[in-house]
Image (cartoon, rainbow, N blue to C red):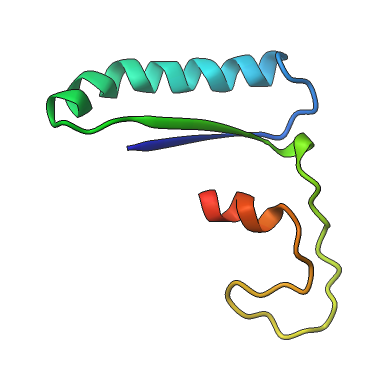
Length: 82
């Protein structure tokens, strides 16, 4: 099982960050015992969007295709995690 927290707040350690951490911890506690009994591991990660250089969509006119963007930024890595 994978749990991905996405933090859009620029304040690490702030209310949003604490809330995401609590939700992840709660999920690990509730699901963890069942997953461990099955031999599965719970992987968790928090992505801080403020740390990533993401170029907003410029509506460049290129026909949209799955996985295609003329800009190669951190959004490729972030969307891959989703």
